[in-house]
Image 1 (cartoon, rainbow, N blue to C red):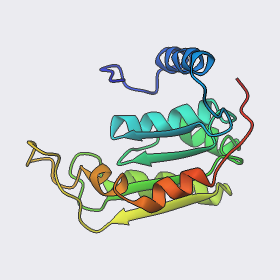
Image 2: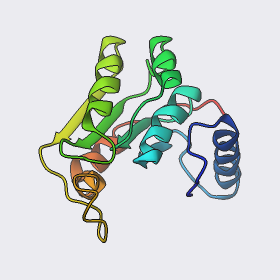
Image 3: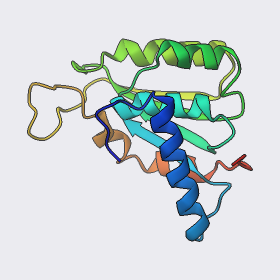
Image 4: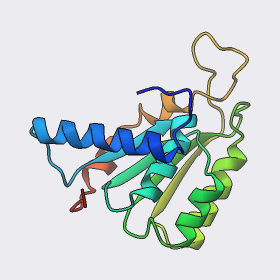
Length: 160
């Protein structure tokens, strides 16, 4: 889903979680393999959602995102101690500076989070947005077979 409110709002996150739980009640799915990813504002949402609901996801892959102060506090409190993260970002991103990922990944590592980080030297702009150079690192990340293979190696009993 898309939002103009941002993904850090507890209200938005609660509604998305309720929606996901409704889907899981009606669709045959492996509840030990719930994965989370998001792009840009959604990358921030992935960090935020994962730290607010730390026992819900088997693995998380934020892309060209950033972490808020609340995310940092949650990481320091151990929220992701059992949730692996693979973060992606383009070094040349002019929309969300790569330093945003550098900082949150460094904090995660300092707090013993199982975190991987792919920092692309050069990422393209999104199609039709030439002035957003470097922001479409999702085109590279989601094309990596290794990401999908990595997801499939991760599972956990979720607390719904």
